[in-house]
Each structure stands twice: as structure tokens, then as C-alpha cells.
Image (tube, rainbow, N blue to C red; front, side, top):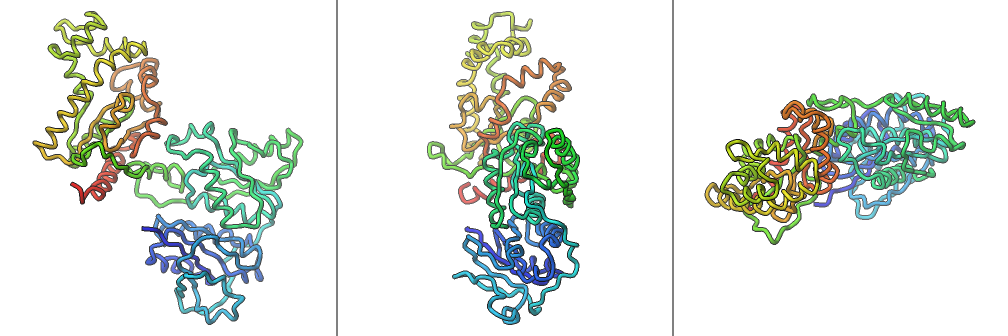
Length: 507
């Protein structure tokens, strides 16, 4: 269903939270909020900074987390209403239109928009409770990752817009600067982040000139651009503003005024998250959700529904598989199938001996998998040889198990856990791919605790596998088990509920 868009014109600032809440029943996807231009007859635009920040902070509670709130600043700067270049389904007013005085006090009435008067309180401009206005500057600059714009980003960008008279420069960190961030593999490409920042800024204030550029170091254009007057930072990055001025002094450039914005707190019930509104929390929210739309697989039967679960060594695949088994899935462990194929009497057993020699055998003639692992993880060609022996045989036996789980145990959803699934090209045997990722440092730690491997041995194992970045790129759903067991369980239950809803008519 297509989401609806609303435009709220507000004059009663003290009632803004209840006004926002009153729009909730209209199931909006986007809500634009504009203050009546007559506010600027009584105060300067920078007086609205804390008010706008408070509106953004309260919006997830009043509107619901899925509504994209955008506070239009242009009308305050131009002392006139600005049109929105989008189809508006609802025009909301927090006053009866008949009380506004004359037609010039009304925003443009969009064709086919439904007019909704949310309260009966008459038109009245009241600026009580606003901040003392601050100075504005011709050229303002700020920087950040700006991954999936959230209310914290919107506050930061809007404050910069309020302070800028002519030009706003935004530095957006590129891939070289994001590797230290939590779940950096889920950060959007820099080109997409730049496009989202530009769209947001041009919508909230069309009066400024915007320069939005990728940056590969903490300073970006602040190190060389003489035409800058102010830098906007958060309390978290305030030291960075001082560093910028140190560099500008060294380069013979003017010192920038530093404007510090407090970070927005977030009320959380999850201990694993940060206690502030952050991109890291938003990326954590993506875990256990669908990152891509389900695509038809006409070559596969719709029943059973087969999910390939992949992930690096020590990433928590087996534990995640257990969670889905308890939720009702049939499970197949392809690593255990490989163990079976190593047993004497199996065709693969003899093929492995023929290619790697009797030196890999235990006294009881079984294959010593640790000895075999030391050989293949030290030589990519030998690893490829072992894979060529095993992969087809593993997939064939997995298909036999799938038929049994569906036909005899009536399992409608089957999880096929296979670390090598992507390398082996088994995607075509699955309706979709789910993956487990963990940071490299955590994988090394787990391999030491679980397998007794030193750092060098652990890194060899990790480097021999598909990277987290590639896993995410090829996955429909991603999990990360770097936090508590409870948070991993939440991820599993979230996607299980989604899948049950999606398949309920087919299973």
C-alpha cells in the first residue's frame, strides 16, 4: 500500500506534541511541518532551534517510528509560504482556517489534498518558550556519516540550515572512514548517503547553496577552504571542532566559530544499544529484518521453503540454527554432512585419501580433520581441491535430507546451515540467503577460546573465507551475534514472525 504524505501548518507551539499525535490515525509515511511565516515578524529564525529539536525528539513517540518527519525552514527565512514538490494527501492545520484572518495567511492549497483542522483553537501566533536568537553566518560547515537519516541527523542538519545565510557545506565520510564503526558492513554507500542528505536539505530549505562532498579524513574541505565561518558539531565531536581550528591556523586560514549541539537521548529497553539516538542503533535495528524484497524462484518448489544460512567461522551460525529449530524450522547442518562424508566407506573418504595421503589419518583410519585443516588453510589450491571433492556430494545429501524433513516430518521451512554455501554456488538451491556476521576481533577471540587457535592461526581461517561485506551484499537477512544471547534471540524471532506472515497463504 502506498504511504500517504501530510503537511502540517502550525501556530500553537505549546500544543505541538498533541497536534502531531492527532495526525497518527491517518497512517502517514511522511509528515512535513511548517510554522506560519508570521512567526518571523516577532523573532529571528535561529530562535526555533531548540523547539525544532524537541519536535524531532518526540516525533517517534507521537507519530510512530516509521513516519519520516521533515521540518520546513524555508518559510521562516523568506517570510512566505514555500511549496512542497511532492503530492500532498492531507493538509493539516492546528487552527480553524476561518480564524486565520485572510487568504495570505493560508499556505498553498494543493489540488486533491484533504484539508483537516486538528483543533478548534483560533489562529494565534505565540512565541513564548522559544530560545534567544543567535547570530547567523554566511558559510556553515559540518560533517558526519549520515547513514540512514534519523532524528539526530535531522536535528544536526536543521540547526546548520538555521545558522547558514548563503552556503552550507556537508562532508560525508567515505568507506575509508567507516571501518571502525559498529556494523559498518551495513552502512550505505557514500553516494547514496550524499543523495539522501541533499534531498533532505533541499526540501527543508530551498534558499541555500549546498555543497555535499565525500571526505576521506576527519577534516575534509575545512583544511583548505578559506570561505568558511562556522562549524557545527555535536557534543560527541566537539573536540574535532578544536582540531579543525588548529589545522586552519597552521594553514593560515581564519578560525571558525564552533557551534555545539547536544546529542539526543533515546529511551531504550535494550541494554546492548547506546543510550543516544545513533546510526549504530539504527543498524542494529536492521538485524533480523528483510534487507531485500523476496524474489520469486520459479525453478524451486514453493514447499518446503529453503533458507541458506551462511556466515564466517565462529559467527554463531549453529546457535542461530538452533533458535530456528526451536521456532519450528527443519534444520540441516552441512558441516555435519561433510563429517559423514569423511567416514570410511564413503566415496569422498577415498578421494580425500587419494589426494592428501595417509598422513592425514588417525590410528583408527578416520580422517584427522585438524591435520587436514592445517594443510588446506595454508594452501588455497589444496583448499580448492578439497572443496571440489566435497561440495557436490554435500549438496546432494542435503537435498535428500530436505525431502525427508518435508515429506516425513512435514517441515514447511528448512534452514540449511552451510558456511561454504556462497563459495559453492548453492544459492540456486535456496529461496533466500540469511547470514551471520561478527567483527574480526570477536571472531579471533572466539577461535582462541573455543579452538585454542593463536591469533595468526585464527586470522588464516578468517582470511580464507568470504568477507562480511560480501556476505551482507548477497544476503536477504543479516544477523550479528556479537551481543547478548537475548539480543540474538530477538533477531531470530523478528524475522521468523515476518516470514510466517509472508508465507501464511502458501504454507
